[in-house]
Length: 114
Image 1 (cartoon, rainbow, N blue to C red):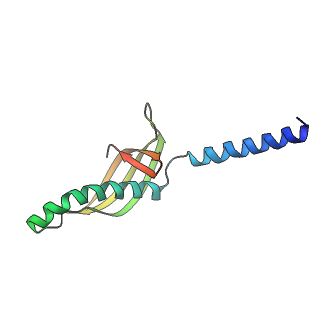
Image 2: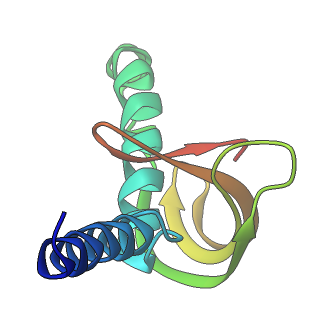
Image 3: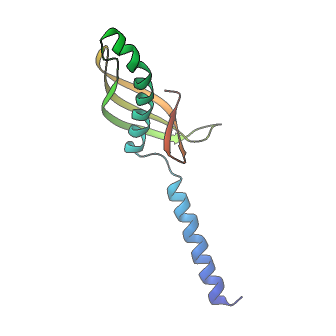
């Protein structure tokens, strides 16, 4: 292999590694909010039928969301993240400080342990 081919191969491999490293970083605030909203969406769908029976909206909506910190999860895949959100639900609006694990999958980020 010529020096030029070897150097070009090194650049291509290095670029690919950097691109993969950038993609495997911690979730952004919008990634985290989307994962939380998806989790609430599943719960809301389950409670929708009950709400219709009793004539009350039992859904919970995320009104605001702020990422506080993330670090690699110890002993599990993904990232352990702290966040603050304002939710509006059946009992009214409230501010919650929470921690959960976020894992990136084929369809984006998912939340575990909220």
